[in-house]
Image (cartoon, rainbow, N blue to C red; front, side, top):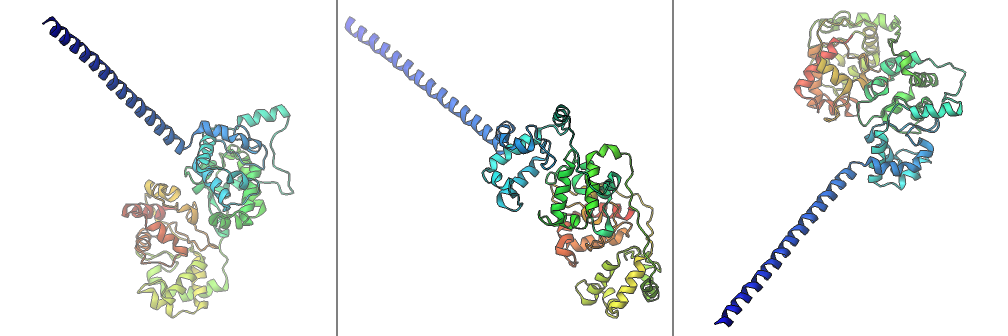
Length: 438
């Protein structure tokens, strides 16, 4: 009997040991799994951060860039751009372009060729986080006793003229206003367009010359810079050398009145049949018909030719244009171009103004200012019409036609592409703003 009791006691003792060991194994297994999950979670967080660009990693990788772009992102000389405070998206875009060869540069191409997408994201994150003020550059200049300067030229650059060209463009030469893409004083609010603020003036001038000569390819910039003179470019660089110095100067562009030529005089008589819809002086009294006063003659001729050919369809204008020869079109267009548009007093629209000048990056809507200018006067040589002060109902009708592709005589479907992304409300607000522009 004592033997049996002893055996039971021994059995339960062994069972307790077994249970304890099992519990320890279970607890160990659970702890190992918890630690594994924590490690995996931390790794996934690090990966997520790295995928969007790691500024600390970028700082290490940027060591090889410092020779040209400075340890603080401020170019070592006027020939190299400042990267401090630049948009990360823009930096990545340019590095990819250097790597693919879309943007050619004998120095940057081999540098970018060795970079992965993660390297680019890290570098961009680092430079975009650096302060934009360039203080370190000023300190370095003080130590050496030198200051950055633009090389002297025979022409004395005019920063006021540079500011006016930057903010208003020059419609007569098809130079668009830069402010729509690059922001006031060069502080771009659109991530794919670079900041120009605090950039080396000489670097800006060099890039504008590259765009002008098509050594650097970008359709819009080739178009605008191609029509700029060397003096224009020098003026623009002078403006960015110190925008604060002319901050209180109001940008103005002097426009000469169109000359009264023989074509204008002849066109006045021929335009008599147009007066019922467009008004005697081109200021249509009927809201659904366009004002023609002050419109580019080249643009009007283009429209008349397309009404005649049927490439722009309109039940009223088709038959009217079919009776005109090219000389008739030129004279009628010249007459209307020489007239002054009358703008109706209206409240406009703050929403429309924001869309006109800034577009909508998230919805990929291009700002109207890029083609039609800050004052809505268009660009004659590029074929972009004057739209400021146009009848609101007419503007709305044309935007809707472009949106539905019912009107398709625009260059490279530019207007159709933009209008397709506009909502009915966008069209209403834009039309209100444009109709009120003077």
